[in-house]
Length: 175
Image (cartoon, rainbow, N blue to C red; front, side, top):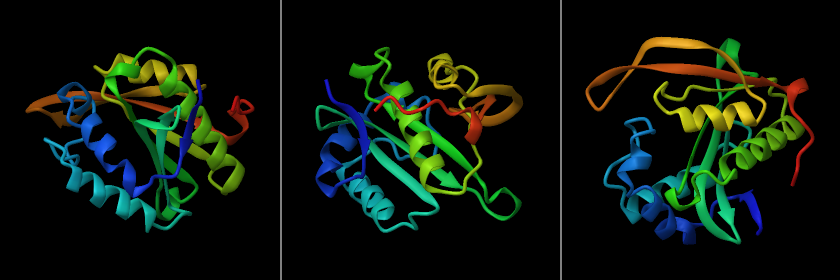
């Protein structure tokens, strides 16, 4: 089975829309992602990342045998945090629990650390999203602490967890 990250293509819009139509996936995402997620939303997103500054936005489709199975993106921060990137990702439900998220996180971290001057990549999953926290831990991220009452999701105040990985901590890529 061929599992990798790759640049987005406009032809991925239908698959992306289908993945983000899941309420279970939306539960773990920030509110800026529309729901329901239409094919037009997907075209807008893919077009935006294809035209984005490639030294600031690192956005990839997660694929299994060439078919989109999720998304992963890191965004370089600004000002004093310019050598830091924030990571976010999601996996289609049919691929949950198969290690795909961990592999994608390892791949994007390897790519960023090999091709940029970024020193630190961090992620802030909702504390209730134990699967996402486990993905980060398995990919070598360190738990830095809980951000208490840090977000409002579906009308509920919730904690988030802070994880990070530094350039010297990245294992050699497995891909």
